[in-house]
Image 1 (tube, helix red, strand yellow):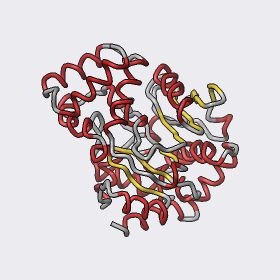
Image 2 (cartoon, helix red, strand yellow; image 1 turned 90 degrees about the vertical axis):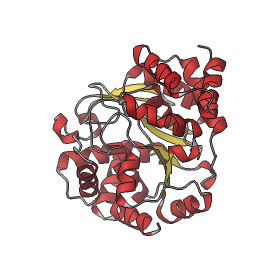
Image 3 (tube, helix red, strand yellow; image 1 turned 120 degrees about the vertical axis):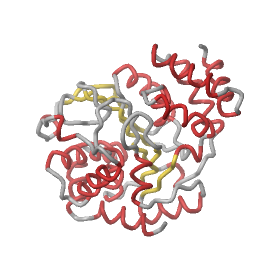
Image 4 (cartoon, one colour; image 1 turned 45 degrees about the vertical axis):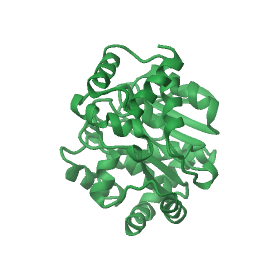
Length: 316
């Protein structure tokens, strides 16, 4: 499919011209084969054209948003990292959604904790100005995502919509940390981000995680090119997969999330959050990952990360 055909298909999904059976067929087709770069560009272009844009801090914000779909059932790493990064004085416009292929997505966690989803720009501006965080629930800004959400949940498997989430933040952030579920997707993301962002980091852990899991070496794509890091080379110990494991329910996942921000989780989980937060802080501030890791650790240990969450929830 050409980039224009992909763009027209997404317009059809959003406009109601594509019924649920047809949507299911489209999604299933991409389970069977990989999406091309032209198709990804076309789908992304349509979703951004159709989205409700929101202007926040002139775009001088970062998003931490992974593709999901890695099948690892990790705890909510990008969501927890969001508040650690905010506690290090970096504004985060977090794009997220309910989980379609795992137990708990970022929207599930935030809703459970009492955050009120909204597309009201005044509410979002107040939140990010006062807490360094606002949360952009994808279906409120993207009619195509709202239309296809029920079909994605019924299928219950990774689809190409997992790939689109990090590419279509309605705040148009100038900085981005994205995790991807394989290296080829990482290369496509890097190509797209290189054209439109001030700076970015795209990460893929070589054992399959779409974030820095510290369970293996990690490939990082950026404007400087791509390279591999071991956990040890960036100051961390290598962990077992159990350290990244998430909860079996939303309630259990929320408990892990709060224990990490409260500096009460096991050391492995906190190390994973510090590593991912450090990469985001380094990207936004242009500092070394070592210095950024110190700032991330201080954000947790000082209580600022938890305070940002409490202040945000108090504004609802």
